[in-house]
Image 1 (tube, one colour):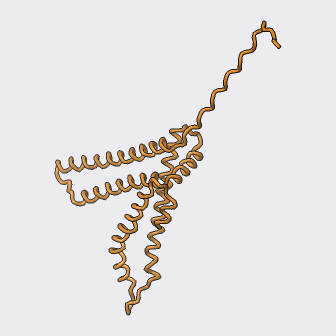
Image 2 (cartoon, rainbow, N blue to C red):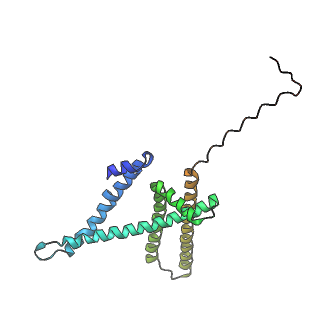
Image 3 (cartoon, one colour):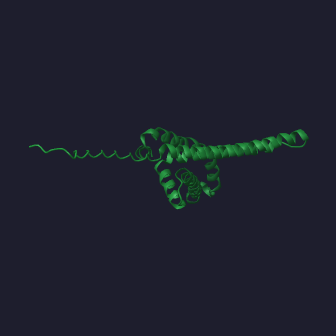
Length: 204
C-alpha cells in the first residue's frame, strides 16, 4: 500500500497521504476492530468452538461496500459543488460541460479536493454529535433554560451556515489557485517599414 501511495500521489502531498493511510488503517481501523470483532466472533462461533468465517467476513465486506457507496455519494455532491463554482467563475452556459470540468479538476487533485470536503463534513458530523449529547443531558423546563436552548439552537444553525460558506469559499479558492493559466499573448507584429520617398532617385 505504501508503494501505491508513493506512485499515485504527487511529491508535495505524499507525506500527508501516508499519514492519512496510517491513521485510517493502523489507528482508527485497529480501534474499531478491537471493539467489534470479538463480539462478532462470539456470535458466529458454533458448538465445539468452530467459527463460521464465511459469515463472519461478510460483515467487513458489507461495511466496505456501504463505505464505498457513501464515498461515491459524497464525491458526486462535491463535484456538483465545483461545477456550480465553475459556472459562476467562468460564466459557463452549459451545466454538463461545467460538471465534466469539475470532475476532471477533482480527479486530478483528489487529496486536496476530497480532503477539504471530508474535513468539513467531519466537522459537521461532530457538531451534530455534540448537539445530540448536549440535548440528551439538557432539560428546557424553565424560562431561562428555554432561552438558553434557543440560543444554542441558533448557534447550531449559524455553525452549519459557516461550514457551508467555508466549503464554498474553499472550492472557489482552489479553483482560482489551480485553474489553468491563460495562454500567453502572441507578440505584436512589428510594423512594416515605411515606403521609400516618392522623389528618391535610384542609385547604382
